[in-house]
Image (cartoon, rainbow, N blue to C red; front, side, top):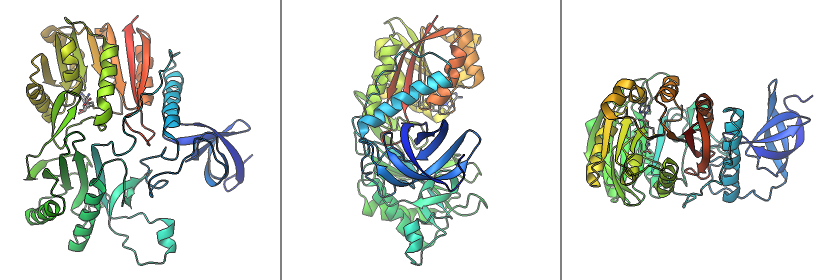
Length: 465
Ligand SMILES: C[S@@+](CC[C@H](N)C(=O)[O-])C[C@H]1O[C@@H](n2cnc3c(N)ncnc32)[C@H](O)[C@@H]1O
C-alpha cells in the first residue's frame, strides 16, 4: 500500500492521453507527469485515488534513450508542450499507440492497423495562431519566489497554468509560433504595464484587457494582432497600434475585438485599427483569406498532408457529391473540389461561411456551395431532398466531437463512405462506437499537426457494412 508523500523508484512504461506518463506498481497505475517511457525515476506520490495514484519526479535515476533536453525555459510549467522532452520519432509512436488504445478502450472497436503517424514538416514554429491571456493572478515560479525580488503579482500576459484557470504564466518565450510572436507579447506586456491598464479579472468580471491573439500566414509572412478587451477605449487602442507598428513594421493588420460578456470566447464587435482585418495563407496551391474569429488549420505546413489523406480515404469519383460537415472557411471542401462533381460545406459560424464562399471565388472554384447551418440540419431528409444525398461525407468537428443527434442522423442518412477527422481521438472513439453497428473501419491515419504537444489529429475511413 502506498500513501501520499511516499518516495518510490518507478519504471515508466508508456504514455497516457494528455501527455502524462504511466508506471505500474504491483498492478497499480501511477501517472507521472513529464516521465518518458523507458525512464527509471525516483518520484513522490502526490495524490491517491481508488484506482490509481499520481507521482511527481524528484530525480531521473536512469534516462530513457528517447529523453532529450527541452528547448523552452517554460517547459514543465506551461501546459502547452508536454512532450518536448521526448525525441520526435518517439512522439510520433506515442501518438500512434494512443490513437489505437483510445479506439479500442473507449470505442470498443477492434481497430485495423493504425498507420504510422505522419510527421509534421516543422517541429517548432509551426503554429499560425496563438492566443495569450491577460490575467490578474500571475503564477510565480519557485525560482522567482526564492529570489526574494519584489515581483509584480497582479498582472500577467501568457498562457494558463494547467488546471488553474485563473493563474497565468508570464510567457517570455514560446517556440510554437515563429518570431516575432513572443517579441510582440513581451512588447505589449511592457507597454500596458507602463500605462497601468488593468487586466480583466475572470472572477469579478472587472478590468479591460482580456486576450492577445496573434495569427501569422506561414506561407505569406503576414501577421495579425487581435487585442480582445472588455470595452472600447479608442485612445488606448490608437496608442497601442502606433507603438506596435513602429516596433514591428511587418504587422499587416491590427484588430480590437470587444467582449463584455462573461463568456471567454464571445465577440460582440471587431474594430479594425490597421490594415484589412484579415490575413492571407496558402495550403499547397490554394489561397485563403482568414478573419480573426474563423477556424483555420493551426499548422499550415502540415495541413496539405492532412487534406491529401482525407482525399485519399474519401476516394470520391468525378461524379460524386461530397458533404463537408463542420467546414470552417472551406479548406477541406476546396481541396476536394477538383476530384468530384460538387462539394457542399456546412458550418454554423456565419462569418466563416461567408469567407468560405469568398475563398472559393479567390481560387476560381465553382463547384463548392456553403450553407450556414448546424451539422445536424444537414442530415435531415428535408436538407437531402433539397441538396442531394452525398456519396461521401467528410466531417471535422471541434474537440467535443459529434452531438448524439449528428451520430443518429448519420445512421439514418447512411452515406456509403464517411471520413471522420478529429483533433480529439477520445471523443472520436466514443462516436465511432455509435457508428460501429453500421460502419466498418477501413483505415486509421494519425497526422501530427501539433509537434511537442500531446495533441494528435486522427483520420478514420468508414465504409457502410
Ligand atoms: C475543427 S474545425 C474544422 C474546420 C475545417 N474543417 C478546416 O479544416 O479548416 C470545426 C468547425 O466546426 C464548426 N462548428 C462547431 N459546431 C458546429 C455545429 N454544431 N454545426 C456546424 N459547424 C460547427 C466551428 O465553427 C469550426 O469552424
